[in-house]
Image (cartoon, rainbow over the protein chains, first blue to last red):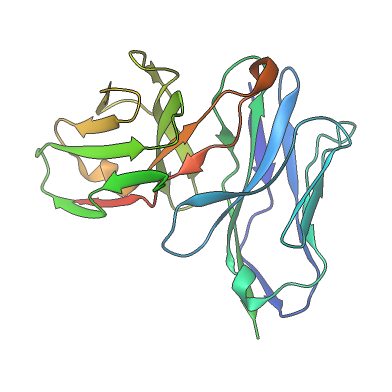
Length: 113
Length: 116
């Protein structure tokens, strides 16, 4: 079946540090990959996505590249800010099949000034 | 354009009580979803509806029922609440893109439910 594994948190960084949150997946077919972010007290919102191999999704300084050979979609940001403190979820859905999203368990990021 | 709205925001129930969580979207999306979020478990799909008039079970459907009232509204009912159903519940919706690719899901703000 389809599954997503992302690095366990919590992650604590200082402002302007480099961020990597690892995400690997198992899927049948050709999945689309997503990173969602959940700010405290809010619902999830899409951060970025990639729909085919070698695509790079980017938004708000965050990037992730769809790596089919390593079945990975790691999230990176070169310089984090306090406002990036949130929970980050990696997710996938398979094209042409189920429309359901499969989520990782989430990684909580705290950025200190 | 409100996106996805959910009511209520907070609810406390006693074991055995029933209640319905309401969800509505104004984006003309075909698909709607109910998730629960528990610490350390991520989001788990309870039920979803691919189109008006259809519903299907997700990963954790036991103890819940749903109704897709029309294209806009998708409700979740707990017939006899149990402490294990204490959670944060999120509704989401999405549209179908080209060539069967599903677009991003848009989430509501959530309902925090406590069952005593």
